[in-house]
Amino acid sequence: MSNQKPVPGTGGDHYIPYEERSGAQSVVYFTRDLSAEGLQRIYERIHGGLTGRVGIKLHTGEPHGPNIIPRSWVQELIQKELPDAAIVETNTYYDGGRYTTENHRETLKVNGWTFCPVDIMDEDGTTALPVKGGKWFTEMHMGKNILNYDSLFVLTHFKGHSKGGFGGSNKNIGIGCADGRIGKAMIHTTPGSDDMWDISNEEFMERMTESAKAVVDHFGEHISYINVMRNMSVSCDCEGTAAEPVVTPNVGILASLDILAVDQACVDLVYAMKEEEHHALVERIESRHGLRQLSYMKELHMGNDRYRLIDIDNGDQKISLQDAVKDLAPFQAE
Image: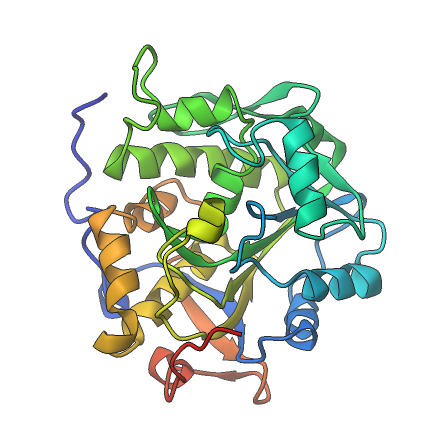
């Protein structure tokens, strides 16, 4: 593994307050309406570039995963807005309910993802997409069926993650589009290592982000992002029923055409919570150096870390982070 140190001021355990950032602003839409209707309303704000054949990159979860985006929300959205779309996934790097295509399809049935086509993109092999301007890769191996789509709708359950600190849109496509054998190994493991998870902290965040950049560049203006801040365990949905209990309050749904802005806004909302509300998730993010995802996306010119947060519940008014997380109810399992 490389001993290369991060650029000063970009350490993944160091949160950069909004007022210390510079550069242009993007637009991030926000609703508190955590429902199928809320998802559809905010989708309307960012769907304009989704043309032709649309893939929906969604984490469909390990068997019986308790925290994934509700299936009924996605079903209603597809039926009303994206009747010809397919959910797209890839097989996992670890041995579990989605390691082989056969097991993955059984898990899809268990979790109820049976109302539309689900394309396991690496079922029939891989393709290499170029990584422009990366320091770890010049190309990343993806499930080859990614080439069959004109547009990508990245629908993400924002939560913690055991390796990434947090899982937002960057993780959803950076890990989730890489194929299960070659691409994910490139991100997670030093070639020849006996430890398949030996790459961590700053380097892991950078490798994952370079993979995401390959996807972002491939789709260009035909990609958009929604992050759902609900049931935010410190664990990823890849941990299924073994996920840590949720202790962070639900917040709402965010959407943008800018991958960095939407992930940054979610992280900012977590940090804007009260200490007792965000301590578990902040500890997970910082202990894994997850904030390096954000600073590296900015270095790779993937988007802006400054944004206008637009409240679609109240006449498209600009809203502060503090107002967005004011009076949050403690999390209660449904």
